[in-house]
Length: 478
Image (cartoon, rainbow, N blue to C red; front, side, top):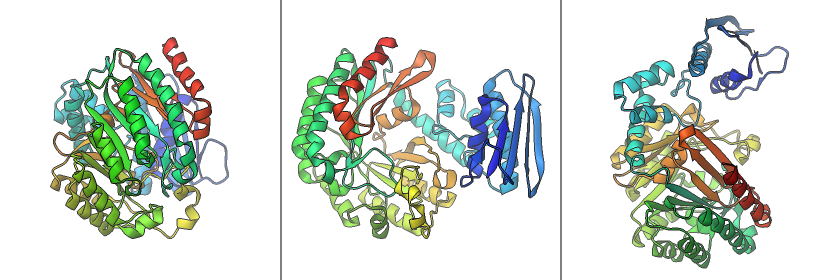
Protein backbone atom coordinates (compact mmCIF):
# COMPACT_ATOMS: atom_id res chain seq x y z
CA UNK A 1 0.00 0.00 0.00
CA UNK A 2 1.15 3.53 -0.81
CA UNK A 3 -0.45 6.49 0.95
CA UNK A 4 -0.38 10.03 -0.34
CA UNK A 5 -1.83 13.32 0.81
CA UNK A 6 -2.12 16.55 -1.12
CA UNK A 7 -3.90 19.78 -0.26
CA UNK A 8 -5.18 20.53 -3.79
CA UNK A 9 -7.05 18.60 -6.47
CA UNK A 10 -5.06 20.43 -9.15
CA UNK A 11 -2.09 18.06 -8.99
CA UNK A 12 -3.58 14.98 -7.34
CA UNK A 13 -3.75 12.96 -10.56
CA UNK A 14 -0.13 13.88 -11.43
CA UNK A 15 1.09 12.43 -8.14
CA UNK A 16 -1.03 9.32 -8.59
CA UNK A 17 -0.02 8.49 -12.17
CA UNK A 18 3.66 9.22 -11.58
CA UNK A 19 3.62 6.95 -8.53
CA UNK A 20 1.71 4.24 -10.40
CA UNK A 21 4.29 4.31 -13.20
CA UNK A 22 7.00 3.17 -10.79
CA UNK A 23 4.80 0.97 -8.58
CA UNK A 24 2.27 -0.54 -11.05
CA UNK A 25 1.27 -3.45 -8.82
CA UNK A 26 0.84 -1.51 -5.58
CA UNK A 27 -2.42 0.01 -4.43
CA UNK A 28 -2.31 3.79 -4.01
CA UNK A 29 -4.74 5.49 -1.65
CA UNK A 30 -5.50 8.87 -0.12
CA UNK A 31 -7.15 7.18 2.88
CA UNK A 32 -5.11 6.72 6.04
CA UNK A 33 -3.66 3.22 6.36
CA UNK A 34 -1.34 1.34 8.70
CA UNK A 35 2.31 0.75 7.77
CA UNK A 36 2.22 1.87 4.14
CA UNK A 37 5.16 0.96 1.92
CA UNK A 38 5.54 4.66 1.12
CA UNK A 39 3.96 7.86 2.37
CA UNK A 40 3.90 10.82 0.01
CA UNK A 41 2.94 14.32 1.09
CA UNK A 42 2.58 17.31 -1.23
CA UNK A 43 1.61 20.82 -0.15
CA UNK A 44 0.98 23.64 -2.62
CA UNK A 45 0.25 27.25 -1.74
CA UNK A 46 0.44 30.47 -3.72
CA UNK A 47 4.23 30.60 -3.57
CA UNK A 48 5.76 27.18 -2.90
CA UNK A 49 5.42 23.49 -3.73
CA UNK A 50 6.72 21.26 -0.93
CA UNK A 51 6.87 17.50 -0.95
CA UNK A 52 8.28 14.50 0.88
CA UNK A 53 8.47 10.74 0.44
CA UNK A 54 9.03 8.54 3.48
CA UNK A 55 8.85 4.84 4.23
CA UNK A 56 9.84 2.13 6.68
CA UNK A 57 12.94 1.16 4.69
CA UNK A 58 14.11 4.60 3.53
CA UNK A 59 15.46 7.66 5.26
CA UNK A 60 13.12 9.91 3.32
CA UNK A 61 13.46 12.47 0.58
CA UNK A 62 12.01 15.94 0.15
CA UNK A 63 11.81 18.79 -2.32
CA UNK A 64 10.72 22.42 -2.43
CA UNK A 65 10.48 24.92 -5.28
CA UNK A 66 8.73 28.14 -6.23
CA UNK A 67 5.35 27.97 -7.99
CA UNK A 68 5.67 29.04 -11.63
CA UNK A 69 3.28 31.48 -13.26
CA UNK A 70 2.57 28.75 -15.84
CA UNK A 71 0.63 25.94 -14.15
CA UNK A 72 1.97 23.46 -16.69
CA UNK A 73 5.55 24.20 -15.66
CA UNK A 74 4.60 23.71 -12.00
CA UNK A 75 3.05 20.35 -12.86
CA UNK A 76 6.05 19.21 -14.92
CA UNK A 77 8.46 20.16 -12.15
CA UNK A 78 6.41 18.21 -9.59
CA UNK A 79 6.52 15.12 -11.77
CA UNK A 80 10.28 15.48 -12.29
CA UNK A 81 10.86 15.77 -8.54
CA UNK A 82 8.83 12.64 -7.87
CA UNK A 83 10.49 10.84 -10.79
CA UNK A 84 13.94 11.50 -9.31
CA UNK A 85 12.95 10.13 -5.93
CA UNK A 86 11.18 7.05 -7.27
CA UNK A 87 13.98 6.29 -9.69
CA UNK A 88 16.49 6.42 -6.84
CA UNK A 89 14.33 4.17 -4.65
CA UNK A 90 13.55 1.55 -7.29
CA UNK A 91 16.65 1.72 -9.50
CA UNK A 92 14.30 2.05 -12.50
CA UNK A 93 14.10 4.59 -15.26
CA UNK A 94 11.11 5.01 -17.54
CA UNK A 95 11.69 5.26 -21.30
CA UNK A 96 9.09 8.03 -21.60
CA UNK A 97 10.20 9.85 -18.47
CA UNK A 98 7.40 11.83 -16.87
CA UNK A 99 5.11 11.55 -19.91
CA UNK A 100 2.28 9.33 -18.69
CA UNK A 101 -0.46 10.36 -21.15
CA UNK A 102 -1.47 8.33 -24.18
CA UNK A 103 -0.38 10.90 -26.80
CA UNK A 104 3.30 11.73 -26.24
CA UNK A 105 3.75 12.81 -29.88
CA UNK A 106 1.42 15.80 -29.38
CA UNK A 107 4.30 17.79 -27.87
CA UNK A 108 6.88 17.33 -30.65
CA UNK A 109 4.16 17.58 -33.34
CA UNK A 110 3.10 21.02 -32.08
CA UNK A 111 6.74 22.12 -32.14
CA UNK A 112 7.28 20.71 -35.65
CA UNK A 113 4.22 22.63 -36.86
CA UNK A 114 5.71 25.81 -35.38
CA UNK A 115 8.96 25.23 -37.26
CA UNK A 116 11.12 24.46 -34.21
CA UNK A 117 14.37 22.73 -35.15
CA UNK A 118 15.01 19.06 -34.30
CA UNK A 119 17.77 19.68 -31.73
CA UNK A 120 15.59 22.06 -29.74
CA UNK A 121 12.70 19.58 -29.74
CA UNK A 122 14.94 16.74 -28.54
CA UNK A 123 16.44 18.90 -25.81
CA UNK A 124 12.97 19.98 -24.66
CA UNK A 125 11.74 16.38 -24.41
CA UNK A 126 14.82 15.27 -22.50
CA UNK A 127 15.05 18.23 -20.10
CA UNK A 128 11.39 19.03 -19.48
CA UNK A 129 10.02 15.48 -19.51
CA UNK A 130 13.09 13.27 -18.93
CA UNK A 131 12.33 11.24 -22.07
CA UNK A 132 15.31 9.07 -23.02
CA UNK A 133 17.17 9.73 -26.26
CA UNK A 134 15.78 6.72 -28.11
CA UNK A 135 12.15 7.65 -27.43
CA UNK A 136 12.81 11.33 -28.15
CA UNK A 137 14.16 10.43 -31.59
CA UNK A 138 11.26 8.04 -32.21
CA UNK A 139 8.62 10.63 -31.27
CA UNK A 140 10.31 13.25 -33.47
CA UNK A 141 10.35 10.88 -36.45
CA UNK A 142 6.67 10.06 -35.92
CA UNK A 143 5.79 13.76 -35.58
CA UNK A 144 7.55 14.60 -38.84
CA UNK A 145 5.69 11.81 -40.69
CA UNK A 146 2.37 12.84 -39.16
CA UNK A 147 2.93 16.47 -40.11
CA UNK A 148 3.51 15.56 -43.76
CA UNK A 149 0.15 13.82 -43.93
CA UNK A 150 -1.87 16.14 -41.71
CA UNK A 151 -1.00 19.30 -43.61
CA UNK A 152 -2.89 17.93 -46.63
CA UNK A 153 -6.20 17.78 -44.71
CA UNK A 154 -8.94 20.38 -44.38
CA UNK A 155 -9.75 20.20 -40.68
CA UNK A 156 -12.65 22.65 -40.86
CA UNK A 157 -14.62 21.27 -43.79
CA UNK A 158 -13.50 17.66 -43.64
CA UNK A 159 -14.18 15.00 -41.05
CA UNK A 160 -13.68 11.30 -40.37
CA UNK A 161 -16.37 8.68 -39.93
CA UNK A 162 -16.10 5.66 -37.60
CA UNK A 163 -18.56 2.77 -37.88
CA UNK A 164 -18.58 0.15 -35.12
CA UNK A 165 -19.39 -3.52 -35.76
CA UNK A 166 -19.24 -4.98 -32.24
CA UNK A 167 -19.25 -8.72 -33.04
CA UNK A 168 -16.32 -11.17 -32.84
CA UNK A 169 -15.79 -14.90 -33.43
CA UNK A 170 -14.65 -15.17 -29.78
CA UNK A 171 -13.33 -12.77 -27.15
CA UNK A 172 -9.53 -12.80 -26.81
CA UNK A 173 -7.88 -13.22 -23.43
CA UNK A 174 -6.47 -9.66 -23.35
CA UNK A 175 -9.43 -7.86 -24.95
CA UNK A 176 -11.66 -5.29 -23.23
CA UNK A 177 -13.30 -3.79 -26.32
CA UNK A 178 -17.04 -3.85 -26.83
CA UNK A 179 -17.56 -7.16 -28.64
CA UNK A 180 -20.15 -9.93 -28.69
CA UNK A 181 -19.66 -13.55 -29.87
CA UNK A 182 -21.24 -13.78 -33.31
CA UNK A 183 -22.47 -17.32 -32.62
CA UNK A 184 -24.82 -15.95 -29.95
CA UNK A 185 -25.78 -12.72 -31.76
CA UNK A 186 -26.08 -13.72 -35.42
CA UNK A 187 -29.88 -13.35 -35.37
CA UNK A 188 -29.50 -9.75 -34.14
CA UNK A 189 -27.03 -8.54 -36.78
CA UNK A 190 -29.60 -7.33 -39.32
CA UNK A 191 -31.54 -5.52 -36.59
CA UNK A 192 -28.27 -3.97 -35.48
CA UNK A 193 -27.59 -2.78 -39.03
CA UNK A 194 -31.09 -1.27 -39.22
CA UNK A 195 -30.38 0.77 -36.08
CA UNK A 196 -26.89 1.67 -37.32
CA UNK A 197 -28.30 2.95 -40.63
CA UNK A 198 -30.72 5.16 -38.72
CA UNK A 199 -27.87 6.80 -36.80
CA UNK A 200 -25.71 7.09 -39.93
CA UNK A 201 -28.62 8.70 -41.81
CA UNK A 202 -28.87 11.36 -39.13
CA UNK A 203 -25.11 12.00 -39.30
CA UNK A 204 -25.18 12.31 -43.08
CA UNK A 205 -27.92 14.93 -42.83
CA UNK A 206 -26.09 16.84 -40.11
CA UNK A 207 -22.88 16.78 -42.17
CA UNK A 208 -24.49 17.65 -45.51
CA UNK A 209 -22.15 19.86 -47.56
CA UNK A 210 -19.03 18.39 -45.94
CA UNK A 211 -17.02 15.43 -47.21
CA UNK A 212 -15.20 12.75 -45.18
CA UNK A 213 -11.42 12.45 -45.45
CA UNK A 214 -11.43 8.94 -43.99
CA UNK A 215 -13.90 6.20 -43.13
CA UNK A 216 -12.99 3.42 -40.70
CA UNK A 217 -15.09 0.34 -40.02
CA UNK A 218 -13.85 -1.21 -36.78
CA UNK A 219 -15.08 -3.38 -33.98
CA UNK A 220 -15.14 -6.02 -32.73
CA UNK A 221 -14.43 -7.81 -35.97
CA UNK A 222 -16.32 -6.29 -38.92
CA UNK A 223 -15.76 -9.39 -41.07
CA UNK A 224 -18.17 -11.31 -38.86
CA UNK A 225 -20.75 -9.73 -41.19
CA UNK A 226 -21.98 -11.97 -44.01
CA UNK A 227 -21.37 -10.89 -47.63
CA UNK A 228 -24.98 -9.70 -48.12
CA UNK A 229 -24.72 -7.68 -44.88
CA UNK A 230 -21.55 -6.02 -46.16
CA UNK A 231 -23.42 -5.22 -49.38
CA UNK A 232 -26.20 -3.62 -47.32
CA UNK A 233 -23.70 -1.54 -45.34
CA UNK A 234 -21.62 -0.35 -48.29
CA UNK A 235 -24.66 0.42 -50.45
CA UNK A 236 -26.15 2.48 -47.64
CA UNK A 237 -22.93 4.44 -47.04
CA UNK A 238 -22.59 5.21 -50.74
CA UNK A 239 -26.15 6.54 -50.81
CA UNK A 240 -25.60 8.88 -47.85
CA UNK A 241 -22.02 10.16 -47.93
CA UNK A 242 -19.99 12.04 -50.55
CA UNK A 243 -16.79 10.08 -51.27
CA UNK A 244 -15.32 12.66 -53.66
CA UNK A 245 -12.68 13.80 -51.14
CA UNK A 246 -12.12 10.40 -49.51
CA UNK A 247 -8.42 9.70 -48.95
CA UNK A 248 -8.82 6.40 -47.13
CA UNK A 249 -11.44 3.74 -46.45
CA UNK A 250 -10.40 1.03 -43.98
CA UNK A 251 -12.15 -2.18 -42.99
CA UNK A 252 -10.54 -3.81 -39.98
CA UNK A 253 -10.92 -7.38 -41.19
CA UNK A 254 -9.01 -8.55 -38.13
CA UNK A 255 -9.19 -12.26 -37.47
CA UNK A 256 -8.48 -14.78 -40.24
CA UNK A 257 -11.23 -17.10 -38.98
CA UNK A 258 -13.80 -14.45 -39.92
CA UNK A 259 -12.55 -13.83 -43.50
CA UNK A 260 -13.39 -15.64 -46.73
CA UNK A 261 -13.03 -14.85 -50.43
CA UNK A 262 -16.68 -13.81 -50.87
CA UNK A 263 -16.35 -11.14 -48.16
CA UNK A 264 -13.05 -9.88 -49.55
CA UNK A 265 -14.53 -9.60 -53.03
CA UNK A 266 -17.49 -7.58 -51.74
CA UNK A 267 -15.13 -5.24 -49.84
CA UNK A 268 -12.91 -4.80 -52.89
CA UNK A 269 -15.88 -4.29 -55.25
CA UNK A 270 -16.93 -1.27 -53.22
CA UNK A 271 -13.54 0.41 -53.56
CA UNK A 272 -12.22 -0.14 -50.04
CA UNK A 273 -8.45 0.14 -50.33
CA UNK A 274 -7.15 -0.66 -46.87
CA UNK A 275 -7.79 -3.70 -44.64
CA UNK A 276 -6.22 -5.25 -41.56
CA UNK A 277 -5.43 -8.92 -41.08
CA UNK A 278 -4.24 -9.18 -37.50
CA UNK A 279 -2.37 -12.27 -36.30
CA UNK A 280 -1.19 -10.73 -32.97
CA UNK A 281 1.29 -13.63 -32.86
CA UNK A 282 2.56 -16.28 -35.27
CA UNK A 283 3.11 -18.84 -32.49
CA UNK A 284 0.37 -21.47 -32.36
CA UNK A 285 0.74 -22.18 -28.64
CA UNK A 286 0.01 -18.52 -27.90
CA UNK A 287 -2.90 -18.31 -30.33
CA UNK A 288 -4.47 -21.25 -28.51
CA UNK A 289 -3.84 -19.68 -25.09
CA UNK A 290 -5.34 -16.29 -25.91
CA UNK A 291 -8.48 -17.73 -27.48
CA UNK A 292 -7.80 -17.16 -31.18
CA UNK A 293 -9.51 -20.11 -32.87
CA UNK A 294 -7.39 -20.19 -35.99
CA UNK A 295 -3.98 -21.45 -37.03
CA UNK A 296 -0.81 -19.73 -38.17
CA UNK A 297 -1.37 -21.36 -41.55
CA UNK A 298 -4.81 -19.71 -41.80
CA UNK A 299 -3.20 -16.31 -41.22
CA UNK A 300 -0.82 -16.86 -44.13
CA UNK A 301 -3.52 -18.29 -46.41
CA UNK A 302 -5.91 -15.39 -45.66
CA UNK A 303 -3.21 -12.81 -46.32
CA UNK A 304 -2.37 -14.39 -49.68
CA UNK A 305 -6.08 -14.56 -50.54
CA UNK A 306 -6.39 -10.81 -49.87
CA UNK A 307 -3.44 -10.13 -52.18
CA UNK A 308 -5.06 -12.32 -54.84
CA UNK A 309 -8.23 -10.21 -54.51
CA UNK A 310 -6.21 -7.08 -55.31
CA UNK A 311 -5.66 -5.49 -51.89
CA UNK A 312 -2.44 -3.48 -51.96
CA UNK A 313 -2.66 -1.82 -48.54
CA UNK A 314 -2.81 -4.48 -45.83
CA UNK A 315 -2.02 -3.85 -42.18
CA UNK A 316 -0.98 -6.56 -39.73
CA UNK A 317 -1.13 -6.14 -35.94
CA UNK A 318 1.11 -7.94 -33.48
CA UNK A 319 1.28 -7.79 -29.68
CA UNK A 320 4.52 -7.81 -27.70
CA UNK A 321 4.31 -9.11 -24.12
CA UNK A 322 1.74 -11.86 -24.64
CA UNK A 323 1.71 -14.47 -21.83
CA UNK A 324 4.56 -16.95 -22.08
CA UNK A 325 6.28 -15.35 -25.09
CA UNK A 326 9.99 -14.48 -24.99
CA UNK A 327 12.28 -12.68 -27.41
CA UNK A 328 12.61 -15.66 -29.75
CA UNK A 329 8.83 -16.08 -29.95
CA UNK A 330 8.55 -12.43 -30.96
CA UNK A 331 11.34 -12.88 -33.48
CA UNK A 332 9.48 -15.83 -35.01
CA UNK A 333 6.35 -13.68 -35.41
CA UNK A 334 8.39 -10.91 -37.07
CA UNK A 335 10.16 -13.35 -39.39
CA UNK A 336 6.89 -14.82 -40.60
CA UNK A 337 5.26 -11.42 -41.03
CA UNK A 338 8.27 -10.22 -43.01
CA UNK A 339 7.85 -13.15 -45.43
CA UNK A 340 4.27 -12.04 -46.09
CA UNK A 341 5.42 -8.42 -46.62
CA UNK A 342 2.42 -6.39 -45.43
CA UNK A 343 2.17 -2.67 -46.19
CA UNK A 344 1.66 -1.68 -42.55
CA UNK A 345 2.79 -3.24 -39.28
CA UNK A 346 1.29 -2.11 -35.98
CA UNK A 347 3.27 -3.21 -32.91
CA UNK A 348 1.28 -3.18 -29.68
CA UNK A 349 2.77 -3.51 -26.22
CA UNK A 350 0.34 -5.60 -24.18
CA UNK A 351 -1.87 -3.46 -21.96
CA UNK A 352 -3.92 -5.47 -19.48
CA UNK A 353 -7.26 -3.70 -19.09
CA UNK A 354 -9.51 -4.08 -16.08
CA UNK A 355 -12.28 -5.78 -18.09
CA UNK A 356 -9.99 -8.31 -19.79
CA UNK A 357 -10.05 -11.98 -18.75
CA UNK A 358 -6.27 -11.81 -18.36
CA UNK A 359 -6.86 -9.36 -15.51
CA UNK A 360 -9.93 -10.61 -13.66
CA UNK A 361 -8.83 -14.26 -14.00
CA UNK A 362 -5.14 -13.57 -13.46
CA UNK A 363 -4.66 -16.40 -10.98
CA UNK A 364 -5.36 -18.88 -13.78
CA UNK A 365 -2.49 -17.41 -15.81
CA UNK A 366 -0.03 -16.78 -12.98
CA UNK A 367 2.44 -19.31 -14.41
CA UNK A 368 2.74 -17.39 -17.70
CA UNK A 369 5.47 -14.75 -17.75
CA UNK A 370 4.67 -11.42 -19.41
CA UNK A 371 7.93 -10.30 -20.94
CA UNK A 372 8.59 -7.02 -22.71
CA UNK A 373 11.97 -5.32 -22.80
CA UNK A 374 13.73 -2.50 -24.57
CA UNK A 375 15.66 -5.15 -26.49
CA UNK A 376 12.42 -6.68 -27.81
CA UNK A 377 10.91 -3.30 -28.71
CA UNK A 378 14.13 -2.35 -30.51
CA UNK A 379 13.98 -5.62 -32.44
CA UNK A 380 10.47 -4.83 -33.71
CA UNK A 381 11.70 -1.51 -35.10
CA UNK A 382 14.67 -3.22 -36.75
CA UNK A 383 12.34 -5.63 -38.55
CA UNK A 384 10.07 -2.75 -39.61
CA UNK A 385 13.18 -1.06 -41.05
CA UNK A 386 14.04 -4.24 -42.96
CA UNK A 387 10.52 -4.25 -44.42
CA UNK A 388 11.02 -0.70 -45.68
CA UNK A 389 8.65 0.86 -43.14
CA UNK A 390 8.88 4.05 -41.07
CA UNK A 391 6.97 4.88 -37.85
CA UNK A 392 4.02 7.19 -38.53
CA UNK A 393 1.79 7.06 -35.45
CA UNK A 394 2.30 6.22 -31.81
CA UNK A 395 0.26 6.04 -28.64
CA UNK A 396 0.48 4.67 -25.14
CA UNK A 397 -1.97 2.99 -22.77
CA UNK A 398 -2.23 2.45 -19.05
CA UNK A 399 -0.79 -0.79 -17.64
CA UNK A 400 1.43 -1.45 -20.65
CA UNK A 401 4.01 -4.21 -20.29
CA UNK A 402 7.40 -2.57 -19.84
CA UNK A 403 5.95 0.99 -19.87
CA UNK A 404 6.54 1.16 -23.63
CA UNK A 405 4.24 2.15 -26.51
CA UNK A 406 2.25 1.11 -29.56
CA UNK A 407 3.75 2.10 -32.91
CA UNK A 408 2.33 1.99 -36.41
CA UNK A 409 4.86 1.46 -39.22
CA UNK A 410 4.11 1.86 -42.91
CA UNK A 411 5.73 1.66 -46.30
CA UNK A 412 5.89 4.82 -48.40
CA UNK A 413 2.42 5.98 -49.41
CA UNK A 414 0.64 3.55 -47.08
CA UNK A 415 0.31 5.57 -43.86
CA UNK A 416 -3.11 5.34 -42.24
CA UNK A 417 -4.83 8.75 -42.16
CA UNK A 418 -7.47 7.69 -39.62
CA UNK A 419 -4.87 6.30 -37.22
CA UNK A 420 -3.12 9.66 -37.05
CA UNK A 421 -6.36 11.61 -36.67
CA UNK A 422 -7.66 9.46 -33.80
CA UNK A 423 -4.40 10.05 -31.92
CA UNK A 424 -3.68 13.70 -32.59
CA UNK A 425 -7.27 15.00 -32.30
CA UNK A 426 -6.89 17.47 -35.17
CA UNK A 427 -10.18 16.69 -36.89
CA UNK A 428 -13.64 15.69 -35.69
CA UNK A 429 -14.48 12.00 -35.86
CA UNK A 430 -18.19 11.21 -36.01
CA UNK A 431 -18.92 7.70 -34.75
CA UNK A 432 -21.93 5.43 -35.06
CA UNK A 433 -22.70 2.05 -33.51
CA UNK A 434 -22.73 0.32 -30.13
CA UNK A 435 -19.87 1.56 -27.94
CA UNK A 436 -18.83 4.17 -30.52
CA UNK A 437 -17.52 7.51 -29.28
CA UNK A 438 -17.61 10.67 -31.38
CA UNK A 439 -14.80 13.15 -30.80
CA UNK A 440 -15.73 16.67 -31.81
CA UNK A 441 -12.74 19.00 -32.18
CA UNK A 442 -12.91 22.77 -31.61
CA UNK A 443 -9.45 23.84 -32.83
CA UNK A 444 -9.88 27.54 -32.09
CA UNK A 445 -10.61 26.72 -28.45
CA UNK A 446 -8.12 23.83 -28.16
CA UNK A 447 -11.06 21.73 -26.99
CA UNK A 448 -12.26 18.18 -27.69
CA UNK A 449 -15.73 16.99 -26.64
CA UNK A 450 -16.94 13.38 -26.66
CA UNK A 451 -20.38 11.94 -27.35
CA UNK A 452 -20.71 8.31 -26.25
CA UNK A 453 -23.11 5.61 -27.36
CA UNK A 454 -24.30 2.78 -25.13
CA UNK A 455 -22.15 -0.35 -25.39
CA UNK A 456 -24.72 -3.12 -25.13
CA UNK A 457 -26.01 -4.26 -28.55
CA UNK A 458 -29.60 -4.81 -27.42
CA UNK A 459 -29.64 -1.44 -25.68
CA UNK A 460 -28.25 0.22 -28.78
CA UNK A 461 -30.92 -1.31 -31.02
CA UNK A 462 -33.71 -0.30 -28.63
CA UNK A 463 -32.29 3.15 -27.82
CA UNK A 464 -30.83 4.30 -31.14
CA UNK A 465 -33.24 7.26 -31.18
CA UNK A 466 -31.74 8.33 -27.86
CA UNK A 467 -28.22 8.06 -29.34
CA UNK A 468 -29.31 10.32 -32.18
CA UNK A 469 -30.89 12.75 -29.73
CA UNK A 470 -27.63 12.91 -27.73
CA UNK A 471 -25.86 14.09 -30.86
CA UNK A 472 -28.63 16.47 -31.90
CA UNK A 473 -28.66 18.04 -28.43
CA UNK A 474 -24.88 18.42 -28.43
CA UNK A 475 -24.77 20.03 -31.89
CA UNK A 476 -27.59 22.43 -31.01
CA UNK A 477 -25.81 23.49 -27.82
CA UNK A 478 -22.46 23.97 -29.54
